[in-house]
Image 1 (cartoon, rainbow over the protein chains, first blue to last red):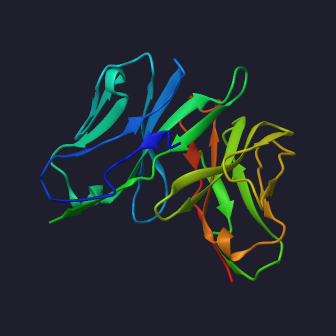
Image 2: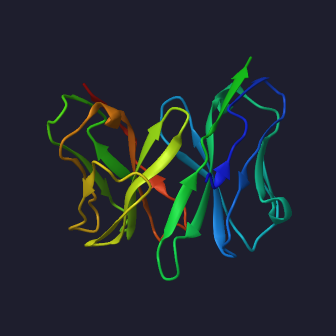
Length: 118
Length: 113
């Protein structure tokens, strides 16, 4: 079963619009970690944010903000006043313990491709 | 500069010809892993390693081997590549086991004909 669902496959917006990328996760662990990564057209994966399951505070970093809601198992990402340089594929990921005493497995969603046009 | 280095960046090979993709990190990270990225499927973990000489299968290990003889290196080996292993491969390392950010290499685009 898919542990991380990014229902939006592709989103297209015009520059300066706000856009929200949805991420819904599934886990039975009480301790887990959520991440967002950006993959620009050049192909590399760029870390954006990490959240642990005990910290539900929303976070803002410049034009980026993240809304973590355990009640709905969601970790959504909003870009305010989008720019062409924001065009990329964005991945949400969940890290949970494989089993007691094991390492963590990082499960990625399938990604949302964001296109920002001038 | 902290980085994960993969080589080669691009590779075209023929079915059955053994190949190795190297991965090296300079951050003294214990945890390393390999992923493949395919259209519509996102990134899927192939193998991971929690430390030297400790490796384990991820979600899609069939057709791959890894080794972790040194902390900094984690090569991915395809003993007999097949066309369904055509993909974009990423190596990643992190300080701890998945609860810290993962640093990714630049990716290796492999085509098996």
